[in-house]
Length: 390
Image (cartoon, rainbow, N blue to C red; front, top):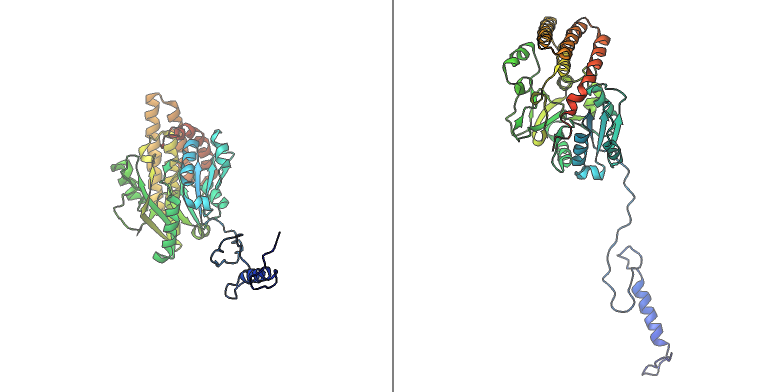
């Protein structure tokens, strides 16, 4: 290729030398940039210089801030639906929240395989039904979050619910550094309010509760529109600080089903933690106890739970009075079942009378055996609501 000769008669290499010097100067880093040479496209004008930052080291892995624990019992479809709803939160996708499902020896369902494949979801199965309290303790032991959220399978939550829970957690220390337990607003299937907290059970308000509608015997409706302290909140949707949970040793496993939430909140308050009701967050609870039929096996569970609570927190004469009332109730229901020809219910109420005697005399092991025997009859009762939270 021929080289052009400059009009002033200079060397034909001069343009190349000058171009090379200019190019070298343009590629040299400016002392204010603090960066190496930038890419320059061939031909045309060079883009304006841009400032780049040194690559950051990957942040150390953090444990989840929130562990959601769901205890499943014969409600695999409801549990799977809830897991899908929870995973619509950014918190799960980012690893800030995790979901732990503990199954209390439900019959196998094909959906279990799909649940195990979901990211952010852990599934553990018991070889037998150990009760709600023990399953919760197992799930909280598996989870790594600083906060623990207990949810029943028969609840539904809005998209982004866990993001809102974490935002509420961030606000709590400023409101009360000793906040240990928080309950949220519950709704019925039709959108109406559902009672989710109440006063501590006493012999008087327990007996008086028989004169109230089932929905208000144990719980009271909250009218507050702002966060306020309460005595206890239901375990169907319960947020607990891990430090509080660990200090109390988790839920008391002498409760098989029901009243373990009341007992936990009472022990938390005694240990200096505060219990709150926060209406800013809400979930729909489709099948609370008061909205379900109470066949004999389920009634046995509720009576055992109440008597267990009374023995822990009531005076001796009150426990004796309650024991007599429950023993007499079981006898009357047994007689009525015999008159109707309902042998299964009659047998179960007979077991309840024996159970009341076991608890009264401190025969804990015998009482536990009766509970586990009757728990086998709960499968069809719980399965009635499976797949009906839609």
